Image (cartoon, rainbow, N blue to C red; front, side, top):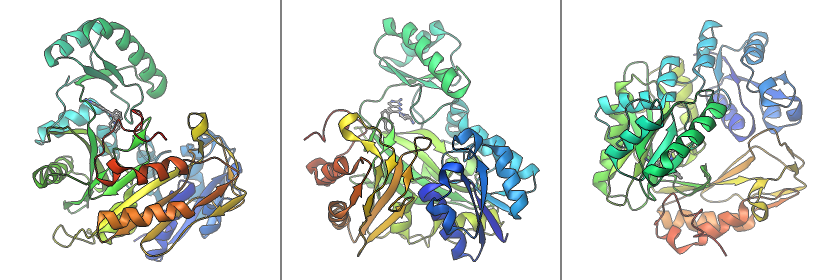
Length: 448
Ligand code: MV4
């Protein structure tokens, strides 16, 4: 096992990783930008290194500066967290070249899953159901139209180098295709540096259910059950839970078995997530694989009682997984909400500023993962996630009841937050019945 870990991130996840390192007695090195001099994650770590100016390009996204920080602080391993460099195969490779252990999967697995058509081909070859669509990017609008004609409308155009919903375009009919193809290509080029797009059949109002997987260097791959993540707006998740509610036992088994088969087929090592769309008929389809620890990992930890960050460290050090499929026993239910510094009254525009008052709940079954304290300055330069509130219970109803109560006692002053929307969602009858899908927020289910 390495002794010193550099945490190449900020906010709540950097603090969570520091805690995971402490659980194994490892020394931690934080990195920070000029905007984060007084940030909690800097104080949490044993040592901290200034990277550079506030813009992420010159700090948290600078491979060169992070490698230099690792060198000067004596770190032997790097945990990338989520976002920033976490899914950069070039960064994983650069770490290896610098003699550092990248705490995550191989650069090859990151690269393959970042190429969405390649990921679809690899999963299909492993027997994982994929949404019907083009096996390769389409060269031009005419070939997109040929593929779409074969699939039937509506279809969706997606960026081959993309993910997370950026550059996607729904196409209702053939006469919309040429225009949508041009727009999608342009957006994909500017967001990902590649204009390549591919075509899939469009599924109406599906659920988003994902499966947490974990592999080690001995070739063992297990799943840690599923998470329901349908409640989101503009591809930003708001509420996540485990287990997914109202999921037929056959579908659940199909999802977890497919996820393990897919991860095994690519020799996957460390924590990963396979995302699926589940349609109203119970069909499920692989969407993409996230080759990182995810924001919503705490709900999985709450139902399994496992420490996923500690497991990541062990696996990265070459140890076998500290659990087996047989010993992973899900218990109860857990729900997480994400509180962002965004203004609901101004179409959820970021709401930067100083947090002048912060009172956050605790108590039975409540877990808090916060990147801020009273006095923290929320910068325009980074993701606006302030904290996550997680509630667990013996069953889903108890977890939601605890969460709703905890949400009622949250006080955040100085910046606007998504708290009002989260209170509305957790009180909503459809949510309480577990009747959720990906279009709910946009369709206005939670207005008023
Ligand atoms: C889709 C889809 C419908 N049909 N693919 C959005 C994020 C990206 N990972 C994939 N996404 C979607 N792909 C087909 N063939 C609908 C979405 C989608 C969505 C998916 C998951 C969670 C929320 C979503 C919100 C809108 C659209």
